[in-house]
Length: 411
Image 1 (tube, rainbow, N blue to C red):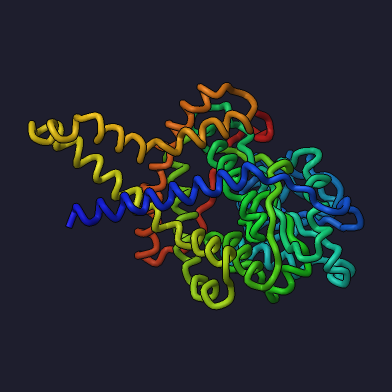
Image 2 (image 1 turned 180 degrees about the vertical axis):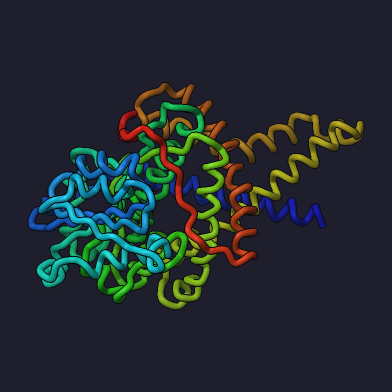
């Protein structure tokens, strides 16, 4: 039985590696030239927040042109007071109170959408809604870079590239930055060509008419409401794109415990999104269907990694206690095979990150590539925690912790 599981895991790893390599090779040849100049659009920023007094003021002061609607979802710290101090003709505060508050980010955003001025609703095709996290910082030219993509009337949403502002703080924040950069440049650019790039919340720009196409409550109550929104938007006939050159930065988490807590919410949200699989099978086709199914079924890859980890541990135990196992496993072919299966992707990911990041050489990038493979084991912890929460029926939104530093956009 164990042998069958190991063989299945190895087959899945090879399949995933082949898929990743294909996405890498395809993305390497992509050069985007959006039509139009992005002029003629009105931009409205939505900033949902819950206990964000440490960061919200700097975020609001850094936002460029456009109206800003801050949704305070029942904060019990000084968030509302901080927003009121900077509120004015351009910045409005929308306060939600219990029992309606703290029912999830999606419900807070739906509430905000219902408070948009009527003149914006009347010109929904030319109004763009930009979703910002309370710790987000837009690159000064981000909007100028992203808005031209909406010159194509089929584009319903654009996701900016996400960077970790405090990526130099420690190794863990550096790995989070690498995670976002690698996913954006290896997968999101190819997914843009397909028309099904993922939406990730922070730095997410949506055409108001595309949102309204999804009904009165476009955001779902899911723990990953952004994932749901992107999939349903594509299934409704809109295209979604990602623009890596337009960036938004956010805080990285500085402890493994906080990171696992955050990722457990993401994993649980992916489990909730499995309900969209029948819709994808019934309404999508070709590469769009393949891409969306790959994303929705990604939790299964976590367990593939778990099987590989169990296999490795079993091998190490065998080497430690069995002379026969040492004789079989401590040979060039088994060692090379294990290394290739485990760390082969590092030779793609490391140099790519070094080139995009621009603050390190290829050798250092290759070292980070190996560390990144180990870093991803945090998803095993997150998966177990997410499954446990789901089994217990716990669906409460788990808030991401913030740092006291109010300037996460600084490298």
